Length: 487
Image (cartoon, rainbow, N blue to C red; front, side, top):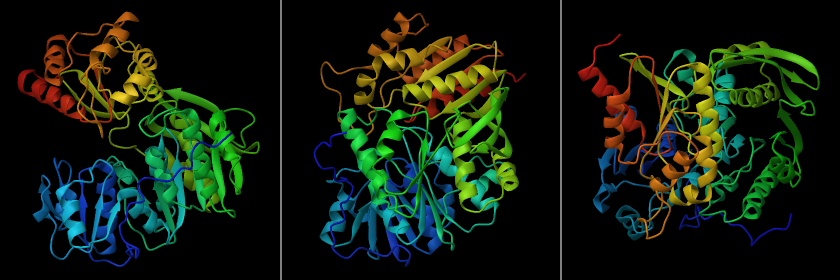
């Protein structure tokens, strides 16, 4: 594979030669603190002893941070940056002309992007990095649950929240005193190159993030650099069924092992069974049975995710029986095929899926969990660039629903739409042409109003997308509670 132009992560943006020691607390100001990754970082810094302030345009789900003393402001303004600030961290969604970033520059305060801050934290730990197009948060959460259940006092950083059910709630982003750190390593802007892990998992590679990877060659080159970043004495665990992942792993100098459901994989899931959308399997290594896993989370794709967690757990000294127990009672993550509510006979499932492969897997899991029931899918496209490049694939992935409502595109990190650009109507037309009912409107409120006129007991509503589509589900359930009797 020939390399494109040299890749340098754009997130290496600290303006200062002397980098802050994030394991020595001070006062940190987080711009974009409501984002899932930034919330996780805030929890870690609070555990270390930092005092936290922050800002965002919206401040949903920040009650836990405020309860721990974080001072959070709605909106961005220079005066939001406290005088005592010793470090400013900002997310990739924050532009360089943000007034709080400008104030930090005027006062010569060290400024870091989110992944640069995580990289600095990880440099002082034995890091386990989870990378790949799909499943990073889930596998990081599973690994965290396994290691925490075995007594490891680890640091855990990933962009999702565990469901607050039983032991699953323990695997929240946190700072620990032990040597291990588990981190979700995102490929966007080659952010995963801020890590030099001792152990890494590569779950698979598909074309995505077209704003920074214009070709497959650029994407594979970035992942090959990630493979090279794994320390020579370490180990890289690679999804066997993904030819791209196996190909880029050849650049690594560390030990490479594969996992999957096929015979040639070193770590293998066998005797796979499914009941009501949840899978069970036996984990094997080199043909030797290790343990039986009975998953509580929906989706056939979770088998490979759990198998990766088995391999990491065993490599870090966790007994097979302990791994089986932890994964078999793990309840999953918020916004990952989360069965949020059921009211008036209508079930609401919410999922982060925004790539065709994810959408197809999510709808298949919902079909298996709710056989014979009508499925209404409210899909929010995420980014115009992704929608344009994967238009036909996305339309096909939505065919497993009885009715698809396509909302306006969530334009994460993108400017206002320009003339001739792909739209929600274009995607809806493609879905409709393939034979699935698709109403000709795209405003979330119109979608909600359509649903309240169509839904009857036994129906399932799936809200899919990486933006704010969950709000539509919340509004729908609220309407049902106010206007329909339960039962």
